[in-house]
Amino acid sequence: MAGEAEAAAAAAAAAAAAADVNAWAKDVPPEISGKWTEKGYFKTDPVTKAPVAVDPKTVAIEATRAYLSAESLIGGDPNLMIRLPKSATEPGWDKVWAKLGAPDKPEGYDFTAVKGADGKPIAQSLADAIRKVAFDTHLPKDAVTSLADAVVKQQEAAATATALERNTKLLAQREALKTSWGADKYEAKLFAAKSAAAALKVTKEQLDALQENIGYDGVMQMFLDISTKIGEDKFVDGNPGGNTPNLMTKDQAKAELAKLKADKAWGLRVLNGDVEALKQSKALAAIIAGDDTLDSRQRAGK
Image (cartoon, rainbow, N blue to C red; front, top):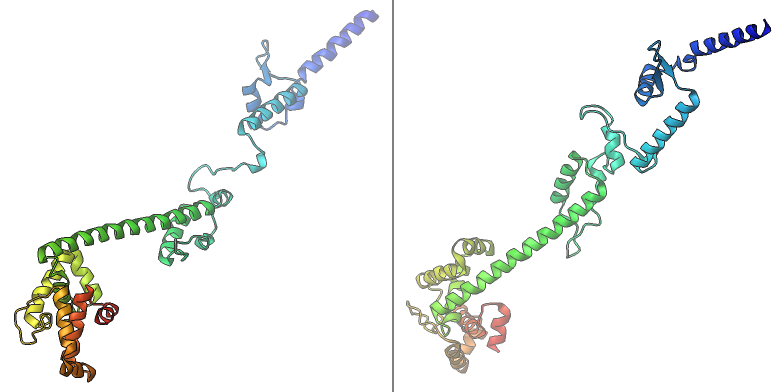
């Protein structure tokens, strides 16, 4: 009898344990218990078809293994992870951008270190434009500084290339003009053309604009033609009364200047500041020097 009683007690205890097998997990939130079911931590009883929880120790071990596996795949400290909002309209993106290095205002982009080859800082208008685009697109500060530096260098390279192209074109046009006018008359005709431009008070900016449209050779030819009409060429041949220019070579200009300097009356006119005599002297000096700068005139007149 005693044996039967013990067996009955053991059977009752086993039944009670089986009935309460899920008791430890009954307060687990549904979203967690659902995930446990997916992972196999809950089994289905083949008789009752009810979910039967695996023992807590197994659940803890398997859950920890899954966590460690996920952490190794991510490859870093979970505290350094960025949690992205589900959609572009949800709040929280400001924290994401800040963690990626974007400032909270456009002024946060510092271009102090961005300078041109001449040491000058980036142009304010360019800096403002880059700041606006960078802030609107949430770009990191370091990346935008590098971008601004690259933009400045590209602008300088483009300006250098443009200047080289312009100078190359200018040299070609000057050579074409020298061929057209004749090498022996080039300096004299050039002086006459520039004198006409000066007499008409044409500014450097206006000359540059004309040159962009019709070229250096076209501009100089135009003012040479004008010089014959306004008389700016009349001292080039040493003949103040002449209406048609008889343009001199350098050697002819040197000979004419030497002849005039030997003329004491002409010398006195120059000393007394006679406008026409001074103009004649400067014109001849410019032909001899090859240009009409003040320095060249003074050097040629010595």
